[in-house]
Image 1: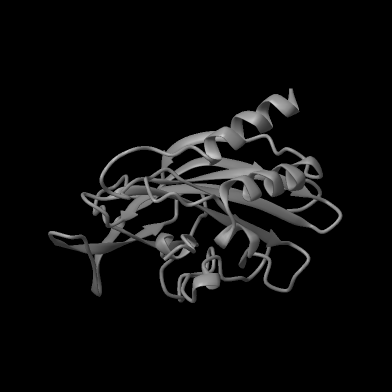
Image 2 (image 1 turned 90 degrees about the vertical axis):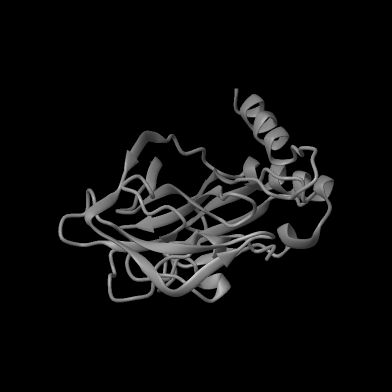
Length: 226
């Protein structure tokens, strides 16, 4: 069964569409947990016509900043076939994590504000982005996310994964953040319950989960092709 699941995942990771633009969603797939290194791996599936292979990142729970995202260099420039083989090799040594599905809005009704001095551009228009405060399920604590959607459902929790032997869990969140054409979904991971870190720091921006005094998380920074 594990081999069947892996084969389906790899087929999805390498799927390409046809069309005149590269606009399309970026989806997040959790590859699994490696207890020996205390790492959890996530692949980003670029469902567009850009011809780019998946990107792979990990969270290192043994580090001083476990919520910081680290990207594997071999997922940035290699050909599809090479990335597929490396993902298959990596996945064979990982423990599959079983998700809990949520499909739940996380946006606080009291805080949806335009992001100051921040817009995104497509070929034909400019659109403002908004800061959505995400707090549902975290009591008085919250973090913030940049999105193109000003509504109450701007940020959704799609899945949650408990990390074995730790107090942490991995959440896959979703929002409209990609400016191509009319805006596309971007899914991105956030590690919660594992201490201080910067989830989007690989691209130089981001916020610490449950740390409201830092800049908002920018989902676009998880797309290392930019």
